[in-house]
Structure formats: C-alpha cells, structure tokens
Amino acid sequence: MSAVRKPVITGITRAGGTSTLAAALHTIDGGLLAPGTPGEADVLVCRSDEQSLRQAATLACAPAGHRPVLVLAGIAQGIPTPTVPAGRFAAVVALPHVRRWFGGDARAEAAAVLAYPPERLPPDVRGYAAALHRIVSALVGSGQLHRAVPPLVSRPVTTALWRGLRPAELAVPRLAPVRNGPAEPDDEALESEPARVVA
Image 1 (cartoon, helix red, strand yellow):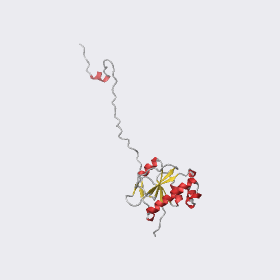
Image 2 (cartoon, rainbow, N blue to C red):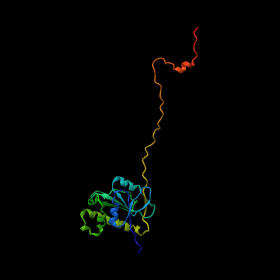
Image 3 (cartoon, helix red, strand yellow):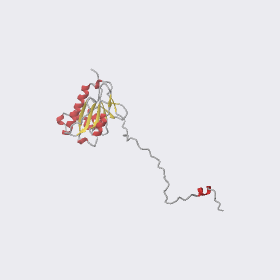
C-alpha cells in the first residue's frame, strides 16, 4: 500500500475560511492563491458570493489528470449550493457558515470537530462536520493523495476593463473677435505704405 500524503488546502478569496478548514482536517494550509502564479491545491476554498464564484470560474486547471475539490464556504443553512461549471473540479462541497466562529480565530475549535461523534456537537457545527466528511470522501475517492504532488491550478491576473477609444483633444483655433464697422489699420500697416504727396 502506497503512502498517502497530507492534502494542501488553498484559498481563492480572502476571508474564506481556508486556515480554519486546514485546521479542521489537520492538513497543510496553502494560503491564498496569488493571481498570475500557479499553485498546488488538493482543495480550493472559495466564498459563496457572486464575485468569488466568478473568480473560481476563471481558474485554470491542468488539462489532464486529477482536479482539486472546490469548497464553497459560508453558505447559510437552507440556501441551495450555487451552480459551478461541471467537470472543472473533482467535486463541489458546500461548507456551512458557523456563526460562533465568525470574527475570531476558530482554528483550535475546528481542529477538534472530527474527534467527536456528530450527536455530541452543537447543532450549527454538525453541518460543518458533515461537510468535512464529504470533502475527505471526495479526496480519498479521487486517488490524488497517492500522487507525489497536488494538482496545479492557476488564477489569471485581473486587469482593468477596457473602456474603448478616447477621442483626441483637438486644438481649437482661436478666432479673432468680430468688429462692427470698417476695420482700422494697425500701426505696422500704416508705416509700410508709401506716404501720399498732395500737390
């Protein structure tokens, strides 16, 4: 039997609960996947808001081989899991929001979740524990933990939207003011004319 390595859990968006999930599963915290830089990830953690899901949809995975598990974090109880393009990930798991962990460091409490039977856990943590079991099942079922390295993933660099061509600023000629009546000659014009001699 070959050795099974520890999974690497990487975040796509900030404050998605990557470190808490890594502590709960006793795995390697891969931090945040930087735009424009490929990284290794067995599990990708993404918040479930619309902007974060758009970022997850733009991720590029290896064209062949194993794919990471996508975890949608922070989904409230009773809310359906947002749809994600099929075939891009090994599995998509909804990780429910645990209100008691909001705003603090929940890693120590999360690390103990799998040590207790579900009936001994608080009701809001039971859903989190069930999601942890689904993540582990997806990882074990994929067989990717028997490989030496996790799947490669890259996140494109975000660029500013192109706003189209901007018109060039044209130089507007300044017109001489319009005067009513006959124009008076200027001093230079008078001096250049020959003097008239009256007989």
